[in-house]
Length: 132
Image (cartoon, rainbow, N blue to C red; front, side):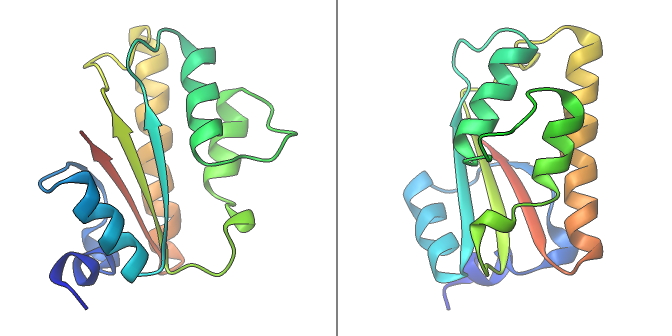
């Protein structure tokens, strides 16, 4: 197994990071490690609904996704439709410093992402978030 794939399996190290390799290297490592990879391009995304829609599309949330913060948290902590995978990678491309959100919404989004990492860690699965 390549070193990046091995690193992805390090549940304790999982968290939010700036991507330090190419996207192709990440894709190969995620595939080798049997991780689901969700890729969202957030270029030009402005506002809560646009962010929620981009994340829902990237992770192929079920059609009944409620398009609100609670639904985002619920679906990120479910992911049962991904099948039997070893972990998860959320790749966020072209993210602005503000996520295109108001300060309050940005804080909520960041809290949900951080809570998702912890949720999966408690279940002995890695959930990585990479920014590129």
